[in-house]
Image 1 (cartoon, helix red, strand yellow):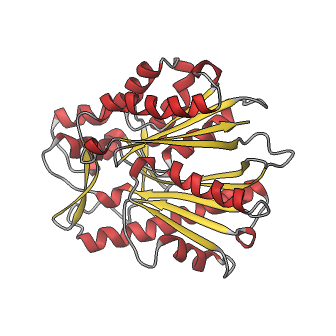
Image 2 (spheres, rainbow, N blue to C red; image 1 turned 90 degrees about the vertical axis):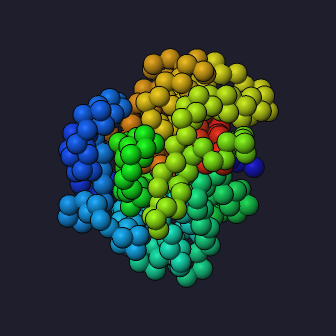
Amino acid sequence: MSNPRIIGIGTANPALRLTQEQSFHAAGYQSERIRKIFLNGDIDYRHFYLEGDLNRDESSDQLNQRYLRGAVKTGCRAIVNCLASAGRTVRDIDFLAVCTCTGYVCPDLGSRLIAHMGFRDNVQRASIVGLGCAGAVPTLQRAADFVRAHPRGVALMLAVEICSACYYVDNTLETVVGNAICADGAAAFLLGVDQPGTVRYPTIVDFETFLAPEQIEEVGLLHQDGKLRIVLGASIHKVAGPMIEKALQHLLQRHRLSRSGIRFWVVHPGGRKVIDDVQAYLGLTDDQIRFSRAILRNYGNMSSPTVMFVLDEVVRNGDPHPGDWGIMVALGPGMAAEVALLRW
């Protein structure tokens, strides 16, 4: 049986693009100490879905409504771009999986996109909610599972986050860091059976997860005063490498591979310290981690779609060749390390 292959990629961001200096002032901070946090994160630009100026007094209802409008608009653009790259339309889609964590709506976001964009009325759905920055990899796995079970089927996966709808202000360092690195964006992958002529995109070979329940409170979103407040434990960057290593060990052994045989490392850029620690722990070169750093610098941390932006960067600028191996890595709430094995 052929492995599922990515046959199209699309990304999208809200139109508003701010420098870190601009986002510092927009957030309403005045402390020079906080300004340095904004400017020293290896981020140049971030995109935000705002309707006018940032309203620091938005209610929880207003934040969630802004999330919905932004997620539909930005997610729709990512899907359109993805389908255009593959010469397909929404009528070709048999399965839609949508990943998000920065807002909650019922009916779910996928159903709303199906209605808004004119998908077939028998398209199958899956909603992946609450997996944070790691969510894209399990969502990719659900889409790959569908294609393996239905070799003639076409699956579409979307990760979309409006992190600015989780805007919260207090004096804690984790809130400041979250406001200094998080951003808005969406990415979509189209999956089908392995086809000639699509070698620029990788096949999806296998997946592995490592869960550390003892770290479950270290990262995520907390309901506080009716709003979503980011949780970023101080130990996150220190545990990232060991957790990824444990997932990698099983995956590589299963396929009789070594780290030296992996050409492309598609690592979620959770932040500068996370990238630094993962690079050091896994022994990656600056060249191997450059795609993650490029996405962090130009977009910030968009939560779940960010690692998909990294793969898009690899496809566009990494010059992958047939036979190259890749590893996609994301870390998120649970606490979980999610890893996918790719091959061109």
